[in-house]
Length: 222
Image (cartoon, rainbow, N blue to C red; front, side, top):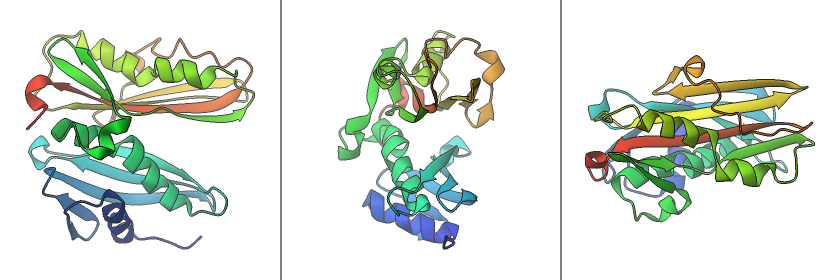
């Protein structure tokens, strides 16, 4: 598989986003949205499966919201390209919705009002390795594990000024289930027991990943 440097991946993201940008190496600045996007390294599992580290954030937040975007080759496509396309479809629209709710890319974003703020959630990615129940994807889409965690967070009192970035990953492989909760780049799974109890894997194997932003209303149109 040909290697791609972070600078090249950043340029690819710029071409996909199609908005005003300034690129400095592996960092994109999007003046219209007030964000920076940074591309980290690429973890290559094999010629068809990679993970690309991509962060997005406002400099005033003091850091980035990082995601390991998975890319799997489809019919000969490049897995890095698939990872970038996935990130721009599932993750970036949440941040755009925070600043420009009517932007065309925000059509995939689910919005849920909570006390003092709002949850912005992206589509759920389900990979069916084998034998998942026929209605599995529909049930997960109706109650994504990440939204469950965000709802629990929203009951904890006043929301912080900085939006809370979170994602969850759940899997069942060879009969073994695993779960992960990441909030503001920190793995905090042990603090959210039961968040994925509604997942009914049956006898199947697969993975579920979903993303969300939890923000207070003053953050909505910064």
